[in-house]
Image 1 (tube, rainbow, N blue to C red):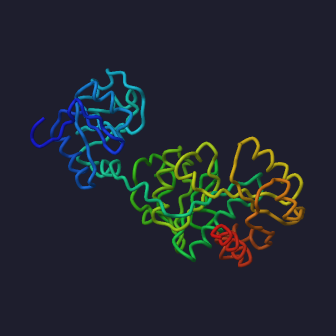
Image 2: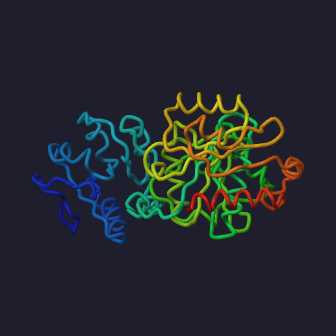
Image 3: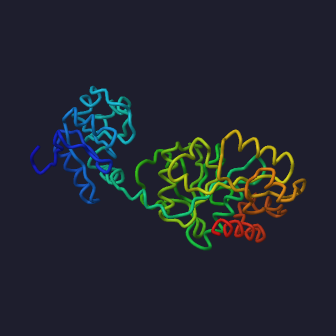
Length: 349
């Protein structure tokens, strides 16, 4: 292939740091390789069946031109993620999206998406990820997640992410339902590398929020990970409400601190024990929820579950009314805010 376009030789196997492109349209190739050059990434072009088979699984991303989609589909290659169909019009490649399990990229309009795919900065995740899970209903796990994120924002930028199934909207709980910005309705298709999301999200002081939208669209694992990695790059603490078990696998979840909120009563402890055994959860830490009818000593809760306790949250009579009025919990009830601060300090220690 001439015109300065680099084509892989038949005896060269691509490393996992490379992307590969199968395309004869020089204009499309030059656009993709131009985006790669700006990021100091590499995109090799090939039309050699054997070389493509050797590199198919190892390449970090695969770009398939509209002129080559049928040829690639005919090779019978095994399914893989990270395949992207590239064309000048969506209708040129849309019919091959399902057979190749690929996203569609229209150039030059979506050249920014190509850059996002090729950007390798996803590994630069520096923030602390805290996941809040309630052992049973009615324990205020969402309120605790909101309080932790709001309190953390006093020390550095934080984010609150709603991943509880049918959560109902943390923007309502925080009094941000009228604030403009993206919810999961807009982010449910997120993939690849996302630049800083904070300017596009509803905010409360130093806290950014990703909540369920009015259409109730729930993210899959890829969208959840993509959004979390973006937030972790720009926020000191990211608190997740729920973090459903079907989503919480792989990077960055392996670095998460998972806090299980457990009621300080016999039924609450038994419910927590059953949940932990059913899910096979490990490396959990407990937040004990005390209040009327929840008066078991903290050390008994810890001993019954054989799990460490990182904090205690009590009953606050003013909290339900504050939440009804859309007042952020850590602002409305100073004692609750102090309990959140102690939990965060315990995690840091």
